[in-house]
Amino acid sequence: MTNALYDQFFGKHAGKETPFLILEDGSVVTHAEFLKIASQLAHVLSAIGLEPGDRVAAQVQKSPMALALYGACVQAGIVFLPLNTAYTVDELSYFIEDSGAKAIVCDGRSEHLLAPVAEKLAAEIETLNADGTGTLTDRAKLMPTEFVPVERTENDLAALLYTSGTTGRSKGAMLTQGNLLSNARSLAEQWKFSADDVLMHALPIFHTHGLFVATNVTLEAGAAMIFLSKFDQDAVIGFLPKATTMMGVPTFYSRLLQDERFTRNLTSHMRLFISGSAPLLAETHVQFEQRTGHRILERYGMTETSMNTSNPYDGERRAGTVGFPLPGVELKVTDPATGVTLSQGTVGQLEVRGPNVFKGYWQMPEKTAEELREDGFFITGDLGKIDEDGYVHIVGRNKDLIISGGYNIYPKEIELVLDAQPGVRESAVIGVPHADFGETVVGVLVADTKTVPDLDAILQTAGASLARFKHPRKLVMVDSLPRNTMGKVQKNILREQYKNAFGPA
Ligand code: MCA
Ligand code: AMP
Image 1 (cartoon, rainbow, N blue to C red):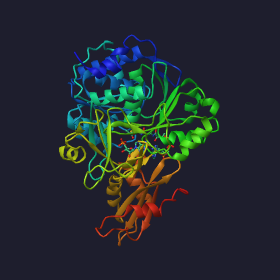
Image 2 (image 1 turned 90 degrees about the vertical axis):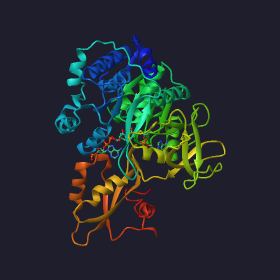
Image 3 (image 1 turned 120 degrees about the vertical axis):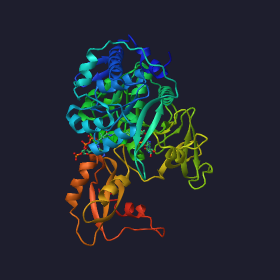
Image 4 (image 1 turned 60 degrees about the horizontal axis):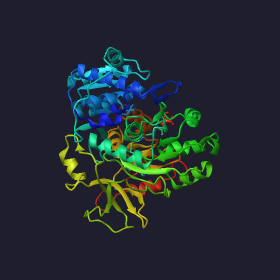
């Protein structure tokens, strides 16, 4: 039987009584205990009739059980589909239906909301609450603690992660066992993770960063994680003396820098701080070094590709860059219009190829063909260049995307909601600089001639269908939107106009 992902991340830890998860209440889940829980959950997935290749959609709070569900899917050959806990029922329904999930795992409080979706798909629904209780746990407790892993090849799907589309519907990125394995192995080696490491884990576990980068690297190394339910500054500072490494989005580091308890002394024992998911301001990098003596290691990735580049562990970690392509990952800068490779130092679109690159978008062959070339290069939509020393710089995006506190927000999705509101003729949604979140959302509205829009009512209605982190933090009215000769809204002009909406940029 082969199931390389199971063998590498889970099976090899059988019987290992060293800590894997260190929880906020001080309790510990060992590697061996974690594997047993995951095995029990794998039995539940089989018992409810799931077959290898079926999808399990999970919208659950971060907990050891929630993480073990990922492990269970790996063992049972099930495709894991984690969902942001902030998603509304409208948002969830699309992901669940599009994936054709055979089972839904949700918090007990949302069971009644998701029951109609489950019914429509004839999917099983199980509950898992933040404290680890729920029907899933009740069933798991009755199951054996060993599970014979299902055979899987490296080309088989391990996970489906949805990324929003710039123009249309969200797309499910199909990640294979091989994608996850190769990336975690490479990162653990690059960043020198060992069984002695203790990672500060304050990220959510429904995205690549917290789930695959942080967790898989820890599993690969047989290390431990301080598993906080969310980024809580007091908890991070309180537990930091027990950690050796930390991974975070730039907001984590800018928030820590504002806290006077975050000192050189507090961090002197730390081995490594890693940042990603959004640009780390060179200013934050510099301030961090001045305060702590540590140079943050910045890396660059995407849901579709996991990690592509990383600053070096031993060499110079250059502020404002994302370092070098990881071993086995090819990265080139091309002309967005022709696809021709540009010379070193010239800005163009970044394309990547390697074992990390996903298999395509779930049931969207046309979208896949648009972004994933036949020769295996994936068009990232990021704009960048490679400098004379080989460091990759990301200078912008060739896609209409806002990244707020590490979460991706696609303006089109919000514009569709705003356009449908009474009194609104049209809208443009832009990202503007924000000290805490890096960027935040501003909605620019043009009123209908007949009715004057009620901005408060618009925000309230938008809130019913869009996750809170996507909500415009400001709505402004204008007479008309700036357009180019082709009629396209010139968002660069709007971004310039509102760049100081939340304080000087
Ligand atoms: C929470 N809120 C947000 C965000 N998070 N609004 C905008 N952007 C956000 N990121 C809302 C809350 O609902 C709340 O709304 C209000 O903002 C303030 O909440 P606050 O308590 O300050 O926020 P928080 O709970 O502390 O969360 C901020 C956070 C969190 C810690 C930065 O967003 C976070 O953990 N982000 C990490 C995201 C991540 O892991 N991304 C990786 C994607 P109200 O109070 O009004 O109700 S994977 C990826 O990008 C690729 C692959 C990669 O390279 O890694
Ligand atoms: P996601 O769709 O959530 O996987 O987000 C991926 C996007 O996040 C990339 O295409 C980049 O635009 C952005 N990103 C990730 N890491 C970095 C970084 N270190 N610097 C700048 N942008 C980043």
